[in-house]
Amino acid sequence: MPSQFYLNDRYVQGGYNKNINFGIRFKGEFGNFNLQAMATRRYNPLGAIRWTQSGVNKSLPNSNVLGLAFNQYCNLVLGTGTQGCGPILAGTPFEVAPAGVFTAEEWFNYAGYIKLSGLEGLDRAIDEFDSSQDLLARPVNGDFNAAEGQLSAFFVAAEGLHGHIERHYFAETVIGLGGGYVTEAEPGSIFDQIIMNVEATYTPKRTFTAIDLRQGFDKRSEIQVGFVAEKYQRFSTEFPATYMVFQYLWQKESDLVGLLLDGYGSENYSSRGVVLDSAVPTSATPRITPGLKAGANYAVFAALQPFPNYIWEASFATLIDVQGGVLFQPGLVWKPRGNITLNMFYNFVHDNAWGNNPNKNIVHLISQTNELTLRLGYQF
Image (cartoon, rainbow, N blue to C red; front, side, top):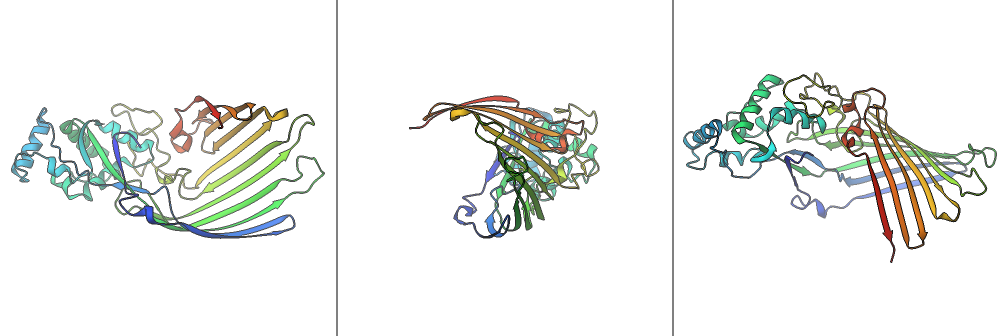
């Protein structure tokens, strides 16, 4: 979430902290096979986000002509006395703030970056809040030029705006089925004792953040299918066994962090104004925001290799978004003594690994995080 927006979390205010999650799972083993079934009733910890009233009574600055004109309009026509547009703005999702969004280009850029629709989000901030309409704002209904003009006018008048959003939490029922198999081959071979599991979950009417941040949220039935294969393999008599795991995940409606796939795939729209990030659009209309219709697809491969005496331990993990994003993380652990551990790992992030649109993969959200991390742990 860009820092120009305030998130009002309703976890305690909405009483969600008093709710409990519960579920049940059955599992049976039949030789090399196993089957399982589960059902869970829970509150999705990701929640869902929408526009909310700012509640901040702060008038537009009189230091520019538009701000002065709007304040006089609020005083004389809307009856705010001498308070300017402050009482009216309190009923909108916006607050006057110099550190907020300042241009239409910023608005569309950040919307596309976090997989929202800049045009539809603007319309919901207007047509679902009467106070926005009192300030003469009108829905643009997909007209980019109208949106650009209207946004520019209000940003100039306010000299920057902070947006206000809120998060609520919703109960959902998750139903799952799974099955597994342990392979048998020549003892010690790479194909022996591979533990494989396939699991699928179905969540009817899961509540998501709508790409326009509307009050009614977005409810869809989500399906997730995952495949996991793991194995310990000894490649040398001098070294302990290597642990290896491969995972594949497909999700029908959302990505790994719970964002709807409808907001994925926007191309850079035009050369209007400044584009803060060339991989993110300055406009996000349904025409150029096709979403990922085939669902989200992710693959993971990781391995862990202890050294003799377990003083050193090398590892790596790779997350691949099939739309072109890769996160590769090699790591090294040093344990000179039983109570001291030094962890070192490096994040290599590439959001355009095979020439696809970076805004189609989840890795683009963390594309700036190429970094080396050191962590020293001491156990008392």
